[in-house]
Length: 325
Image (cartoon, rainbow, N blue to C red; front, side, top):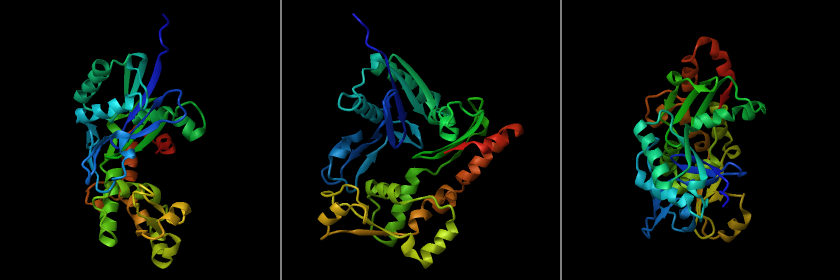
């Protein structure tokens, strides 16, 4: 009897979403790393099953992560069961090598739990754990220079859901003493946007699902903050957009007005409009000035400088020359 060919499964296990796929796949699957309960019907959805629901207003989320670390294994196991099932990846663990990401400076207790679950609960043939910044570093040569070789000196800036890391690498190894973290990530930006538009326009405090979509589609990091602020003040039309809020019949997350003409035509009678202008670039500015959201920390630009300055002096010029976000 011939043995089945061994496959390699790559699992980027983020605190907001899981990017999963086999090593020979063109694109990974992106699956929410949450268990979601609807407000009206009280139904519970695991991972990507939330896509089947039209009741997306006022969702309650249960994440396996706290402050970027995996601590609620019962929730994660339910999500992994879904990811590995025949309906999603069709994974056969005994015939699969698992490569899985973990946080920078992950706790040993969490690492042991992950190893035990991977081998004893699922029965994977082998497991490799590493921070997502390590995987980014391995592919940095292609991203920066179109070359397969990893630069000798490199800083990886990982902007995640729970926080942001600036991680230097030298000769393929992380310079642990120079790693810096900023406690601002995607979750705080979404909450900041919710608070801002709720104060100015509509009450969106319970609409995390919608406002996360608004953030991803409409917000951007300004290269000239004060210039854009002046433009928004004097010629608001240049930066202003109108976001059509979803009716959950024609659209689940909404869309920027003018970009979905067919859906817009069907919704012509009862459209709710959320106007956006300086919020589009003022909210992401919290990445650089965490004081905007009440945090007494430096921004990611300062974290990068501190990470480079924490390395040996002879490495600093090359570190500043190779920064991968």
